[in-house]
Length: 255
Image 1 (tube, rainbow, N blue to C red):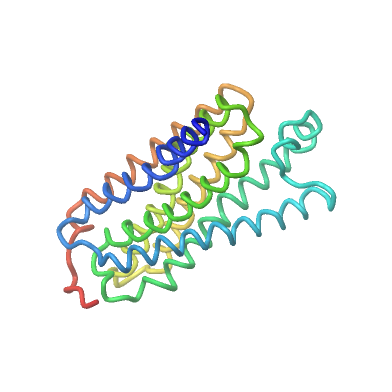
Image 2: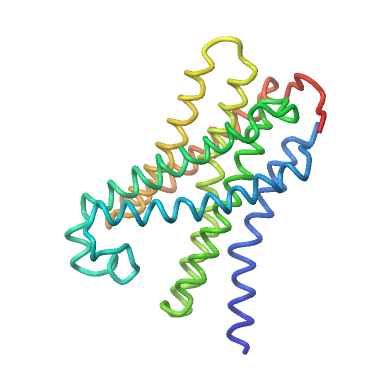
């Protein structure tokens, strides 16, 4: 009983608290004219739905890139066979699926659901909506990880991996989709070059996500580059939203 209470507490610390922290952080950056709570909550749930959609697409990708009898299970990925067979394929899978596909789907949802709404009246709104969507995604992904592996890993491994996911993986989604959201907002209020701005944001967010995943999987000291990439991305996004033009209110909200 005490073990399950400890697991529940740790789940809250690693999967729930990071979400609330970053929600509050980016809401504070947009405190001049906060976004409607209903709109924010709606995007958060869309993030959760997106996580399940991506999970299905990943399974399809593993089926195609590997073989019909192989799946990306924890046991397989940590086996000697996998380390030989997946040297190139795992990088392809992580790069294209986790990087390009995940951010591409998030971009599509943001563009479809929120881009034309009147409440989207500042460049920084794109960051708030993008990070909210990303946090819903990260919450669902980390929750599934916790549920799937708390019986397969020992306590030390589970807590370490969950902590890493709670810190690094959540921040990865926040930064990558936040960058996409920033350029989504920038394109909305620019008269020229809208398509190029959108492509720039999607490319930067996807490459950052993809490079983080690929470097993290390396079994060499180069895997620390993943955290350097994450830090650079966060600094880049922070500089962008600190500029005055990102907080110009182009019209008043009408929910």
